[in-house]
Image 1 (cartoon, helix red, strand yellow):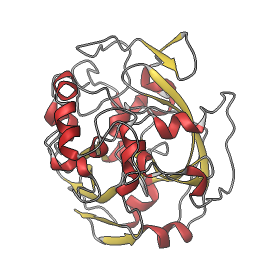
Image 2: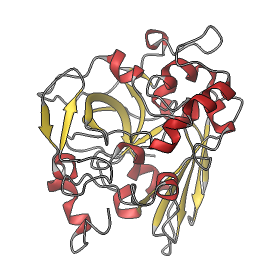
Image 3: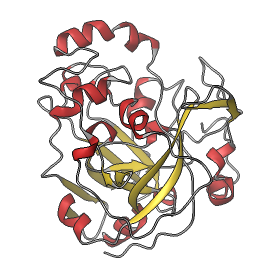
Length: 312
């Protein structure tokens, strides 16, 4: 498979914990046998021990990368806990190798890929994105990954395929949070085919020159830079072409708060907070939130004629 990465870009990450889930957190965490702090049995991933992952070239940005401790220590990954420090503390149970991803559904050539073998055969591109999330905190993360389009084209989708559905691993032994109904497991996300084929849509396999840490979605996660971070599904095990708009986890759980499209639109407030501004990790000042996270030139045409307040 050949991949043809192109331009220079920027991105966003994850949603806030809904109030009902936060209020239930103590009960869930107690039942999981976890604490908000790392324990000897559930140690956080030591990023310095992760395998180096070379990139063929780096696209520079004028923005300073967020310190790696913040990127790997402040995450949303409910399979490992509901607070943002829980994934770093608890994701040591995840076993990202060996790992396979099934790509199928409405395609001519379904395939099951061994992730390590697949990565070893591909030329690597490192991309730098501006990473943001719903609450207004943001990060600058140097991802290593591949445009998703190359993989999707290689399986030859059928003419009636309109959407791409993504599914996360749901193994209670590796992901103790899935023993409790914080969401309807497994975690699911979806894109229209034209969104999935956009050159900005990335399958990320590393960051900061190393393989992905468990808490950041090892070994393979999606990055969709013009959408809110909950669209960037982690620890993917299946990618399927489907005819109808797939049901996604947050849209199912909180439909009034999380739409299918989830494009960054500062003019559409979340029901519980404004999305007009963001705050970069490590900074006190707030910045204006940019439409499509600053990628309007590249992606606004995908939504021409759509009511972006209705299709939020």
